[in-house]
Structure formats: structure tokens, C-alpha cells
Amino acid sequence: MTQPKYVLSGLKPTGRVHLGNYFGAIKNWVELQEQYPCYYFIADWHALTANYADPTVVEQWTFDAAADFIAAGLDTQRTVLFVQSEVKEHAELHLLLSMITPLPWLERVPTVKDVQAQEEATLNTYGFLGYPLLMTADVIIYRATYVPIGVDQAAHLEISREISRRFNNFYGDIFPEPQALFTPTPKVPGLDGQKMSKSYGNTIPLTATADEIRALVMTMFTDPNRVRRKDPGNPDICNLFQFHKLFSDDATIARVDHECRTAQIGCVDDKKLLADIMIEKLRPIRERREQIDRDPSIVWDALRDGNRRARERAQETMELVRQGMKVHYRQLR
Ligand code: SF4
Image (cartoon, rainbow, N blue to C red; front, side):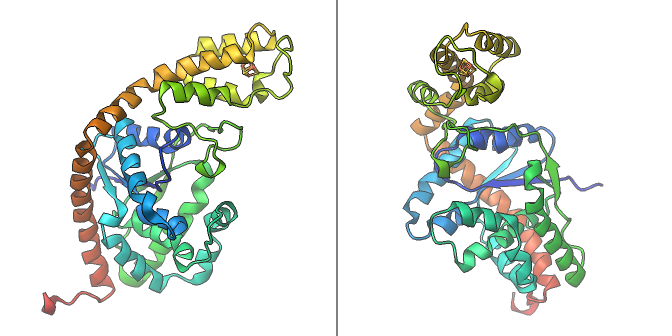
């Protein structure tokens, strides 16, 4: 019998899940459930790399992430949704992998440079350098075949593949090399046109209320050259128009494109139109989140069950790893 191919992915909790997270990852996660057994986790240990000095927010962020994933359509009967820190085997594998990983492999990972450039917190820590290694442990401990990523993240998976190969060379074939599952991820700009990211303060929460959406859309950057209402605009360089492409139907996109170029629609009216469309499109997700907030046990029960199922698979893997690395004392059991 052929082994099922597992999908594995995680998200570092940073607060309310935003539209960049949704279109960049979670929407794909929901779709992948139809094709594969999936393991998705909330990477709360990774959240500590930047928030170690004041971790009080991490627990709330973890809850918010799980609640928003479920609201967005993760089916936790089928899919294993869990919290990284509740599966201690990740830490054990991280430690064991640290014995075999050459230091320069970690130092050259592009994420390390990117994050160091972005984050304000002092990230000159051992944990931060080991961050790609913990990520590797997160993936390979489930012997996952596929990791859904955008094309721009391909380099980030490479170190996991290299470490799996190195491990297998020393200790036998235990880990499949994780493969990138390239999923279409549209570019999601923030309110200001930069990439949507919590660190830029330009996000729209996935479960924003109607009032929040209206207020945030009003602050969106538009075509910077369209100064007066009677000036024709150019949707190609308008940040707001990118959101029409994500949320509006083809007829609306074509109409706004035309009416903008001919100055028939003003930016304020277009903002109102977009806000109404977004409110409607996001309504089912927002309503599910409201239901969860009335009964948070929906999240805790799902996570308890997910943690247990994740642990089972991680423990199976660790038995093989311990045997391979000769830290498996049968006589002492
Ligand atoms: S009318 Fe719409 S698409 Fe055109 S510049 Fe204004 S906000 Fe952008």
C-alpha cells in the first residue's frame, strides 16, 4: 500500500489573522484539505523569537490564530490543527538536528537576514539563529511530503531538504525530503501598498467588523496621480484596485477599471463600493468567528484533539530518530 502524502504548514501567531495571511496561506490550506491529510500548526515557539522579553500576548495570539483558521474553514475533524509547543518532540528533534547542522548553513538562510532587517527586537540570540532548524524539525517530524509555499519562499525550504538528506546519510532513510507545493498566492498589498504585514501596521484583519472594514478601506492608498475628482485615474497603479481583484467579480472589476479611467467614478465612491463587497465576502468567516467567541471551547477542544493526533505521529518519528542516533535505551524502558 502506498503511504499517504502528508501536507504540513504552520503560521507564526502575530495577532489577528489578516488578509495577507488568508490569501497567502490559509485559503490554500482550506483547499488542500480536500486532497491530502494535512497537519497545520500555530508556531507559538517561533513567536517567542521576537517576543521573548514580553510573551504575555503569545497565548492570546495563538487562540486568535486557531479561531480564525477554523472560522476560515479548516475542518478540524479531518485536518490536524495543533499548537507547536504542545508537541514537545519538535524541541527534541530540533536539539538532535542541531548536532548535525553545520553553522554556515544557518547563517546563510535568507529568512534570517530578512527578519533581522525587519524586526526591531534584538534578535541576536541563539534561538533566532536556530529558527530555520526548528522550522525544519516542525516539517520533517511529520515526515511531510509537501509544504505549501509561494514561489518566493522556495529557498527557505531548501535548508530543510539539505538537513533531511544529511540526517538520512548518517542514520538511514527516515525522512522524506519535503517538497514545495507551489500554490498560487496573489500579491496582497497592505493599506499603504507595501506588502501586508503586522510589522508595517498596514493590515486588515480577516474577521474585521463591517465598521472596521469601512474605516480601513477609507485609509487605503489610491492612484497617487489622481488629485481631483475629475482627473482620470489609472487602476494599474492604484493600491485599492488590487483589492477589487481579490474580492470583486469580473464584471465589477471591468466596470471600475473603465469608470476610473474615464473619471466616472470617484475614489471615495469606489472605496464605499469596495468596502461593501469586502464586508459581504468576509461575512461567513466573521460570523463563524463571532460564534467561536461566544463559545471558545470550540477552539480549545479542536486543539486538544489536534495536539493529541500530532503527538502520535511525532512520537512515531522520534522512535525512529532515537534508534538512528543511538539514544534509545531499550533496557531502560
Ligand atoms: S477610482 Fe478606484 S481604481 Fe480609480 S484611482 Fe480611485 S480608488 Fe483607484
